Amino acid sequence: MRHRSLLVLTTVITTGALTLTACGSRDEGKTGDKSDGAKTVVVIGVDAPLTGSLSALGQGIKNSVDLAAKTANKNNEVPGIEFKVEALDDQAVPASGQANATKLVGNKDVIGVVGPLNSGVAQQMQGVFASAKLAQVSPANTNPSLSQGDNWGKGEFKRPFDTYFRTAATDVVQGKFAAQYLFKDAGKKKVFVVDDKQTYGAGLAAIFSDEFKKLGGEIVGTDHVTVKETDFSSTADKVKTSGADSVYFGGQYPEGGLLADQIKKTGAKIPLMGGDGIQDPAFITASGEANEGDLSTSIGYPVEKLDTAKKFIADYAAGGYKDPYAAYGGYSYDAGWSVIQAVKAVVAANNGKLPADGARAAVVAALAKVSFEGVTGKVSFDQYGDTTNKQLTVYKVEGGKWIDVKSDTFNQ
Image 1 (cartoon, helix red, strand yellow):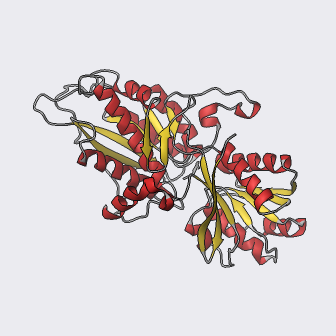
Image 2: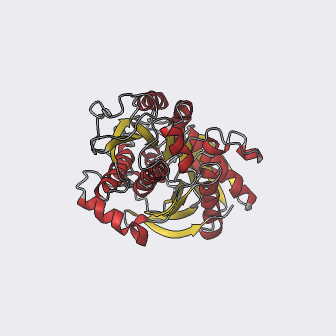
Image 3: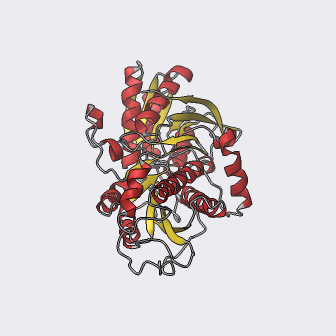
């Protein structure tokens, strides 16, 4: 959400009290050690929609990073370092994300940032972080251009910013995976494609459509909806008259749930499929009609079924967080932990303390080499900053719940 953007909330730390008194300076990177033996405080920033229609996902991101920081402190993961978190609300609005990026850059204690949820927000944040050599790791962005450049679709790959990383797979993988499942596994041959005109939704729908046609399927119609609107009856009528045996929606669950509802009310009892942006319980509850058979893809395997996630799930429950970790909790924890591991490598290479100068840049360089077994499996990044873990899952609505029906590793 990837852009989500793949798509958390116990608001975390204010940083005004986090001055590094032993340093005597708050210039970038001047976070050095403390002569009195006290730990040096560094901050992991978080940017996500903590309020608004996508707050269920944003709160899970925030809480999961908070858990990673607390775990690192409890285990003394990086001797001499205490991790804090500063979480900012972007409300899924690009301009707010850009303002938050500027604020996080301005806090000299911030050593890395996890987020955002939405790819469109990330586009406005990347340059701000890059200018400050501040690492950014998204647990949910799926737009390929964020890491591979605007011409990735033409086979021209150029990483725009070396400060950008993500633990989520891209829409290239997700869109193709969805098309293959709908055509081969579900046996659908005539699909009507709808998107919400946003970076995530439109991009995902385009990738799906291209792959579906390559497989031999037919796109019988296309349309667009507007975010935050609720009346999609005209689109629903077009779907009904098109003769489609399925619908693919590129967008988020608030609009997706209403669209699915209104399509079914026309009498077109056909499944709607979407990406990880609709894979949320709120998609189901948004519809007054039964959603049985609707489909979604999501990055990774179901966290609840991963042996590697058992401790995370138990620790999250024990943490007393008000909101669930949601779709991106595991990826958010891994994103936060990757920053922690990069800090650990930098400290170890600098005689047990952060460099007095250039700490942020050093963390960026260390992130590129991070490799560990995380909540979601092996965590490492390729030459573009993309995750090397390209596991995906198809979910189906059964009995009013999202049930995983197929998980696989996708190889492009």
